[in-house]
Image (cartoon, rainbow, N blue to C red; front, side):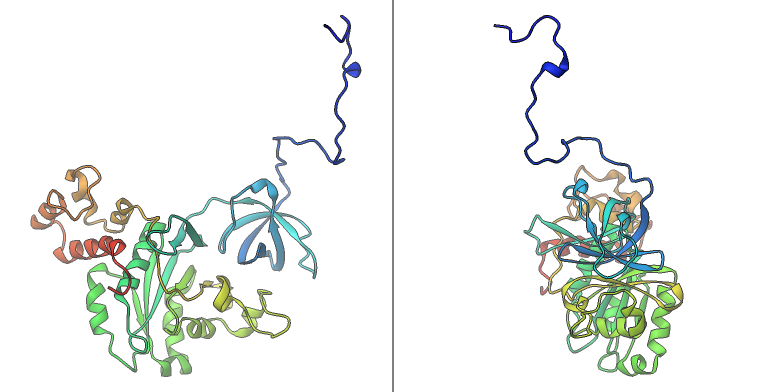
Length: 336
């Protein structure tokens, strides 16, 4: 039975009222063409500290971004109150495409990957030569994560007054990784800071290392306290920064010559997310030799073409050994 006549008008059709009194949902998202560009400095429980021009602005992720999360180092677009004044809040409406990503999982069996830092140029792997003893397996895992994420590695060895660096350097010599050796005395008189700065100028560098290796001490020497306070990430009650144990924090080097990203100390570095086929890209002298490899070759099996490639003199055997050691580290724990 027809409820309406032949000449119905849209005004005659009943519609349900919107009980919430808000606007109806739509798939059309605003373009926010007037959004300002910013850099994410730190993330703390859903609140993001961003640098917009010369102002530190607190922001939250806009609902329209869905599950896409912004991390330290992300270049973002913000709208809303960008004054940076107390109790103001802006919204992040876009996250720019990332040039590099440092990721890790809790362990190798954990499928959930966590993005630690975005858009970093290099990864400074800080390790003590003694007290605590070096952990080569953890260093290997950090190297794999750096190669996989598009970051250049930098090895920073501390406490050379307690043990010599030659043994550790020999282990990584074939990888041609730039390195800096420091001692506690050199950190105190500033000579070590100058050498490290040479490797950081003009770059965004993420620092990673397990507790006790002197990573935070080094970062404190590189970035004076007044520069750290300018990020706005200081506890108003204690006057102390909370980032050293809870979250990553981007800090500008004096003179605007680069950025340091201080990350919390790690006990493990899971590599569940890493595709072994991407690690070979960090070995340009070996990569052409993989053309004859069988499909899905692990590069550590009898049919791997890299053995013949090296035997013909196209690459140093030590390089192949280093590649296989790094690929195998995904199958071992850091303490092995």
